[in-house]
Length: 399
Image (cartoon, rainbow, N blue to C red; front, side, top):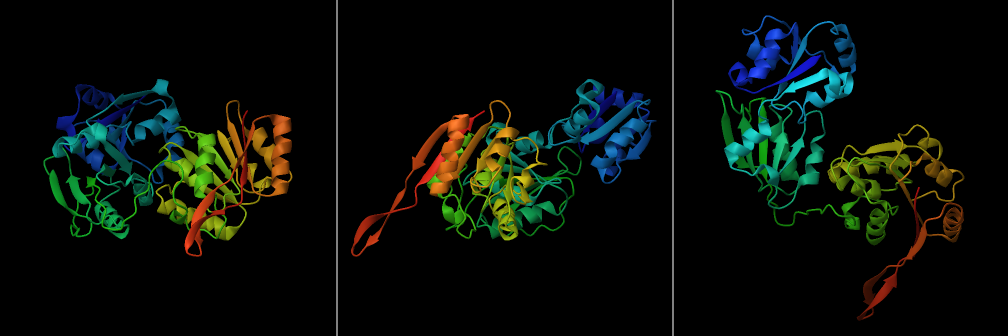
């Protein structure tokens, strides 16, 4: 049995009775140096610091201690962006007990007078800072779980560089402890260089004049993306993502990804949505990564390779979009075979040959075909007329 005990900056005095009892019974206590120092004088157990890197060593470490009573220290609530969920996967829920403390998010909201349900939490602990961009919206309140003393300045720098310099920042240090301190300023003028490593950054988003704010529904403007023309255009993208129907926790294959727009907007739909963009051109693949970071989903996975061979080692998808390569032998059959019951496949084509491939797939597998034609107003002499874009044929099917 492994017991995870949440501990705050108030140390032993803030532990629950259950947490103290677990530590008193433990043979070995695992944790970070700061957490172990908080209990050093109160327990008789062997104190061990986590190995680094932690995740690869964790299964072996726990196997080594299988015959001992093990207690793990975690900051605040271990199941909220903490090690508790990782341990549940490694040892199994039936071998895990958790004694949580008050989370840093709850403490920060209490100090700031913020309603927890109105706050979005972004963790930059072991995660790219660029993920913060997904959450930016005028007036939105964010709590950023910091990776250390440098995080507040990094958050301020990103906000200022992206046109959110007027955003109000409050750094909440050592929440609940004797050295608790709150310091405020704006991202553009942030000058605090001596932040405590244990901190949470509270952000009230304010956009500077001219700053762009992106919605989370499908169909971002085309100029939100860096591209070389290989881009699923805005209106077609909105229809395509409507058919793909992203749901939390699902994985998308974006095959022939071009600029990566479909995979990126799938990922923006919900923090738990995941996507793999498959692109054969190395320059475009690199561009997808930059677009993903710029739009707040740096976790999007980019595979440089040609389908169908590049699809063989990918995890099974919940949905597949084929934006390029519908006429390549094996691409559509491979994508179809990879799907589970209830999974969706959407493929687009703009050429006659591509339409033929989609029509043949529909005859064999079912689904629906839709042709979408978009015209945009443009000057015609001194007047305004309609300039049609190439129509796009969309095949969608559920397995």
